[in-house]
Length: 367
Image (cartoon, rainbow, N blue to C red; front, side):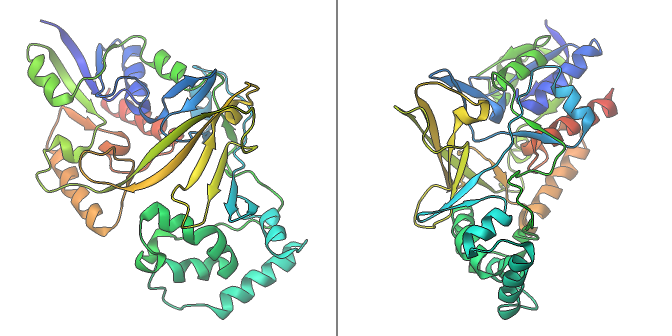
């Protein structure tokens, strides 16, 4: 009979950090994952010598020095700065919305000119109590930025017209009145040289790992295997067999191509903001690591309506789903040997640094 201290369900970043920290405390861990690879959504495929972010662009950024030092134990990071572009018809704009964006939109040069145009547009269309996302967005950024850079992209993301989306989805749309194309405001930013897989491999090197292994099937097949506690990073509603119903998500599908050119779009990420173009963005993976390979690999990203059986990506944290999650959370509190974590376990979207923070906090709490 094999005996472990912890069964960790999910070999993504959250589960791997937990396994690593528990191993340092001389705890014996077995980690299972239903996919055929470790790493969860930060997994990279190597295609044509390029590290392809299989589940969408993952750029590490944080202002937490402790987390930055932690992740740098496992890989050397380059100095990649996320400076995405937006394409509307045949026009190209810088993101986030900054002076380069405004200069391209209106042919102006100074922050004062940009502020005057935006304030004029906001004032002429101002809505005291926005009833939908469109009214809220125009209140924040005016009509030009909304029509060209927000409307179509948002409608593709949510699969609904902006007039049919609630206003709370967009609480703020940051406007920068500087010529600064750095998408993030964090102190530290970069991509691990050689991709993310090496990080997960090192985090899991002291644990037993079983892939293509479903949690429920594992429990039946290895009923003689003993473990004292479970860290569960799968969907919390699935753990409780959907007794209160399904939590809802938006999902994404990817169409990846190898192109016989060394440079397709000139940067890592280009957002396509027209509604009629079915994908939201194109990722050219080689630019994350400043690659010089003779070929390139691109991925088109298609937001899709989620239904049970599809991969859950983005939790829909509206009132209905939030109330449903609370029911599952209350069920989880009744269990003294199961801990839920990560995006699916906590029904909350996490950036990578926040995933690490959350995992480290859990281990401090339970050890």
